[in-house]
Image (cartoon, rainbow, N blue to C red; front, side):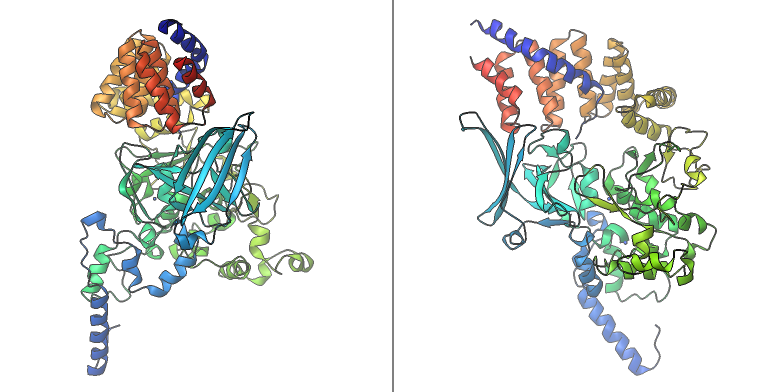
Length: 616
């Protein structure tokens, strides 16, 4: 068969799948974190303590090196008891390197079959290492493909379950299987219910920021990390207390601030309730859209500063017909709607309910200890006579008089199978209606979104977020909710005049014009955007589409190549490049791109068929 005719067949077979893909890529984002003494004898004791403290701080730390972060080991030299308690808490082992010793604690080996894709999965240990594999067998019983990778870390504490991370080159990925504690078995990892991502679901900086101590993502490259991806593996002291170098140096010099606030370290208990809650919100409040402020990364957030300086969290306003029901990573918002939270807003700061009123991050009670532990927290504000339930009802709880069992029940997590989370609205009764202010939290400047973490006043009197933050939030939301397109266009129109020399604005203008089939204008805006910031994968995706629709075949290929270079493990980008190459009659490169694609995505049956046709 003549080569051109053969590729015409391939191109025809691929057209419908790739045309749909390209249209989606034109608007879709890539899918895929706190005594003075008198007398000679007392002075001698003080001197001895000071010398001991200096010895413990013998290692020199520069406040400017590594952003002033020193790691939890430096803190444990003086705070060993706290460190030991924290190591047993969930956050203290949020991410665990896989070692031969750790392997002995895992429920392996195991197998799982996914009937949706007819794929098999295995998890097993060999030579002190942990592996997962995915494979498919044909009707003859022979393997069609097998993809196996060594895993590097276990992510999660086991309360609901745990997953695993792997590293390929400089990139981190989620493994396809996770263990679910309630089901006592391995199943597809969260997110894999939407599709088979194999071993190519990249770990985004915003995710790993909350599941680790100090990750080191490479700015501008989603999923790419420094050669040492974590300087602190699990969540540690500095996630809540901020960089510790200045504090370590001050203690090494023997400085003692007595009962005064120590200016060298953040103590969340000494912060305002809002600033203290901001630390927790950075990971325990997801909202409907999370937008990094322009030029910021998750590593820029510092405890004690308003979270809004780094990250803005937006929520779609609830209605009485559709009240807020999610518990998963919505802890702050649920708490803010509770009577306990609202009734204490007018009290002195130390009497206001905040996250750490009930939660001590250093100490986590066991499941058996939790009812009594949290009963004690409730009794800080309430008394035994506060409860209006009958004696029979209170006796019927497990254990007896279990405050959280009645008022903060666990509920299934709708987006993660076999998992549950605590409802933080602290209801008197399960059918307690939401307070009226739940449905009046928007502002006149932004009537269709609530910003949950503005730096100043919160609620209906909050200041409006920047136009650029609004643009990013609406841009994220409109992908699945077209009703936000008009608000996105309105924010974009204002920015087109006020802030034209901004890469984000120019990219959005290009996207707008591409959708309106103003191809020349779209190309101009997208090229302008990429001159301002050349590390924008989505802008290259849109540019490739605009060039293709304009009949500029080579330019479309060049933009698609650049998108793949920036994000080499996104399947849809590589598929688009293959299609562009076939369209441009670059058959050898198209076949090489298919072969490279299948090295990363061997589970893709469609591409296997495409390659087989190319080789005929």
